Image (cartoon, rainbow, N blue to C red; front, top):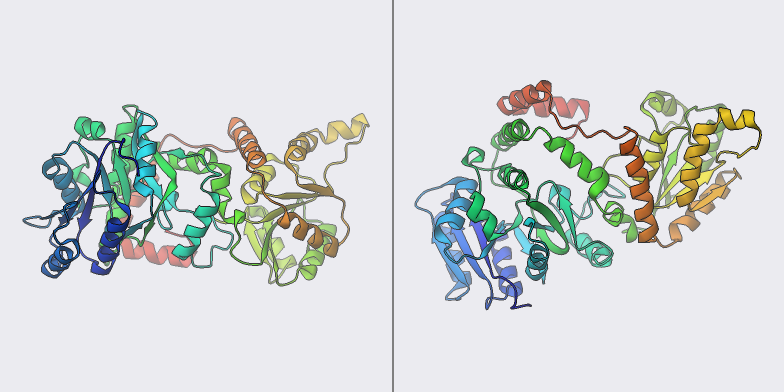
Length: 484
């Protein structure tokens, strides 16, 4: 651990969840260099305040690196953090707000402080985690239906962290592990009490300081495991989330567009496809992209491929929204997705026939790190053919810069064999980045991807309604199959 860097005060807000708090304190005892840094435990008078206080004092004992305080009354998460940072901590240190349901991994703080010191424009640094929305690692999964145990995140992070840039600029940082430059606190304070007792306060802080030139970043080589919020039970949590999201969007109408832009463009390609760098099973997951027109020949080829795919080759048929009904009729029992799930990736993507729209190319780019092109565009020298197919030919030229393999149709068994071979090839991060950025840039430049800087009155009204009626919203989402 480096003793040349600025020291940090780690503020751990305490409310309930004693088992999680015990794990957090034990991890801090094992990972923090107390000759440099200190820990402030701030008890916010939860329902078991006396029992938690007794156990905390037992755990830290007379340890000189820990300070314990108990609020005179419950202040809520926002009030607790503000009191601890603005009133109780007089060190002048940078501040790390660390949730009590976290388990920091060794070296996390040295890495986060190194990132913070790397650029004076960085105001906030967040670690990566197994459960932290856009800071989650991996964010997109090969099998979204499977659970993500902390062990998996640790293994995958160990495999890919040095393939990633040291940090990634993001619109906001996640509050579970929130390292703040002291200069920023001195200038702008901390959390706005309008977000009390919690939810959205860290997003508001990041967007507020960003208006003054400070950025928030993800420290890609620091890992902190996170159980997840258990502070608000019943309808209170959903109501707070929706109401505070409405406030955020009213203050920062570009916020939703900024998150979408981050996910589509600013993440490193290794981050996007991290789950494919170290598969957690022996299954090859394939995205089979259909052409614009589903002809009888296409149907026959898809059926042949599905029939030849053994249990260790899982094929998802990727179609446009307009094709979904006919695809379900043509391929009963098959996995079918419209453009691929936003948080699902595949090991291999197959374009079954020439791609004729840039939207198809963009979907292929987002689905997998490896491509196979079946019967791509024929480069016929006749001008009649060239004029009729100039758009598809242009897309094909882009494809051929980044393809893993082109092939003519040789039956379902031949395609499955090529898929297996492609899945066994090592992913080249440099080539993957070049492809990811080239296609993403073209998609944005041509208007295929649009990230809006405004928010509609309809959405604000829906958020207000949802905040007042969270159970009705939950039932509607359950019926329509929409996620939270």
